[in-house]
Length: 408
Image (cartoon, rainbow, N blue to C red; front, side):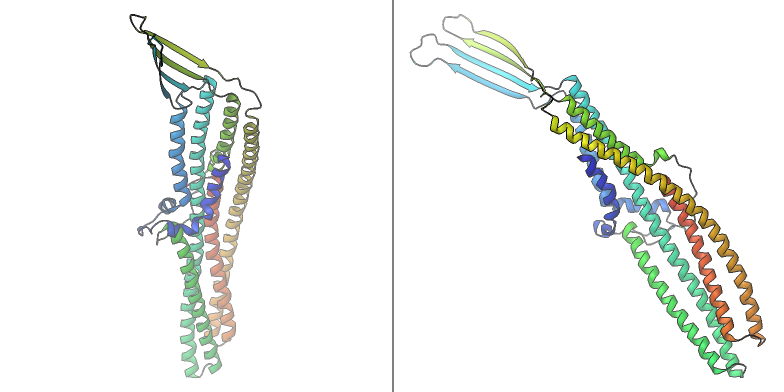
């Protein structure tokens, strides 16, 4: 059942991430942090990674043990007997023996194969866990990027509204505009200041989540990742699933090979002393016991191994299907993000021209303040949409690499 436990480690890599801040002290801020450095920092803080690394030591010890022919620790025996009572033979016997169980060649090779596949399974799950950590870091980075872009746009919008409010204030004093226009401009500034405060709070929250995962305070450069044409067969998720299946099959082969207990061999040296004999008599004895195995002996173990194989095979098929679906979805998302960015950029350009015309008309007295504010609000929304689509494109790049199993 170790296959099932190992599959939980990959899930635990994601479920345990919010507790990383308690699992390891914060790392120092890196100047010019890269995505690879952020992932490495998160990996060093991941509890699931430490568990799997400890499992590596465990399976290494199991591999070393599997290379031994001894099925049990050697046993040293000592026995001595002597005549008692009225006997005149003066007989005394001393025997020293060493015994142990040994693996048959088929049993030994099956144990070695299981130990090798166990080692491969742990290594594969380490790769899958690292990929899961990279996926979470990618999500946190682009989540922070979206919040940062929104804050920048809100601050820029506030700056423009403050400039407009100053102009309206001057014109109200000059008598060109009504005092109600001045109040309208002022309330727009106050609303924009509230939006900026909310955006700052949202950014602080996502940065805190990023620090919990990575222990870093600085974000990587918010640029789309280079797309890599990864080999789907080398995807760590698939490798981990197939490694678990191979280990389960190796466990079944071991169960089949050990339907009988390993034979035991004993070597003894015996010394006999007797008054009628001029010299002691010594003898060497070699004993071999071969248990007779039956299919019923390991029927339960083999049935359990068959269950593990069926489970691992089904999980591997599910991972394959999910991976294929994730790749197709990521490619579709990337194509849509590119189209949406082109559309959002064109809309923002058009609305900037529209607002420029309204500003000219407002200064000439041909348009009212409400019309100008409405045009500026639409332009601001378009700018935010275009900026967010740039973030969405960067996230789409990261998600496609993640689906392909590409590490930063």
